[in-house]
Amino acid sequence: MPALNPAFADIVELLTAVPDGDEAAVAAVRRRDAELTKPAGSLGRLEELVEFLARWQHRQTPRLENPMVTIFAGNHGVADQGVSAFPPDVTAQMVANFTNGGAAISQICGLHEINLRVFELALELPTGDITQEAALDDQMCAATIAYGMEAVAGKPDIIGLGEMGIGNTTIAAAIFAALYGGTGADWAGRGTGVDDAGYARKVDAIDQALALHQDGLDHPLAILARLGGREIAAMLGALIAARHQKVPVVIDGYVATAAAAIAHAVNPEAIDHCLFAHITREGAHARVLEHMGKAPLLDLGMRLGEGTGAALGVVLVKTALHLHTNMATFDSASVSRRLD
Image 1 (cartoon, helix red, strand yellow):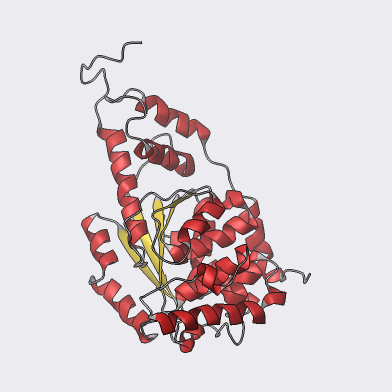
Image 2: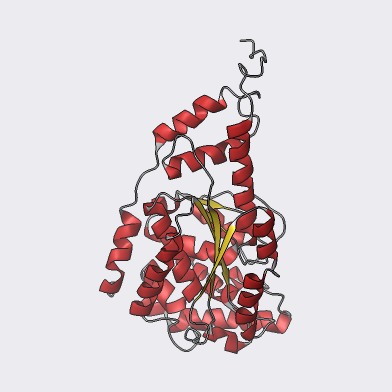
């Protein structure tokens, strides 16, 4: 088995030596929750979301003063294989649409006062066509992971991870096949809405890539370099930096989940600070979440990507924290407590 490139040594260390959550903060949240004017546990996962915030922010009084969604955008050489219903030019066009406020994610973030940041990742330079060559060399992959770590520089108190990149559901499916086994048909979906011929090309491209790179898929980070995209590498970097800087993470859909799956394959505990916003209709997303033992917050039949599901996940967390912070207690509202 080939040795892992030293370029990845620091990344493996950061994924392995992850800080624990703050259980004292969770206990403080539970004490307040027990005083609120409701039956214990009656708000279900909304109560758990406040505990999640406290645990990973390391705050007994969690806060959401700077919620953020980030979109990482990259282009893919495999798009030349006809795997998408849209041309690669759409990546840059949609980045402009995000910035100009015309996209769904722009509207969700605007409505709910969530900061939106967009990172363009060398859109003029697509990754290698994975049916012909590696997507990235190891050094470029490591550098892109490091670049993604800058997403938390603005000190968000929660960060949602989303992406944009024509062809990237093909890339995500190839990563899942390399991590969990199977063929392109086991993991590919319709993406942006390819027809039957496009779907067949997508499956074939994944199978070609798995065969071409089979001797170099011996480590999750090697899988990312051989098959992955810049946006997936950057989302992995953001996820890593968030853990070390006490920032909870909300993962978007199928493609963003690929970044989390790489981290999980290195160290399952490395994604304990991540919520999975929703389950998509793309490919075998449900199976990926099952592999990681994660339950999505929402099932709305969405498959847009672009951080839309992550933003809605942040909205749920904001709602949960608002209730926890602003509901009356039994004493303040003069409400009788439960009879035991």
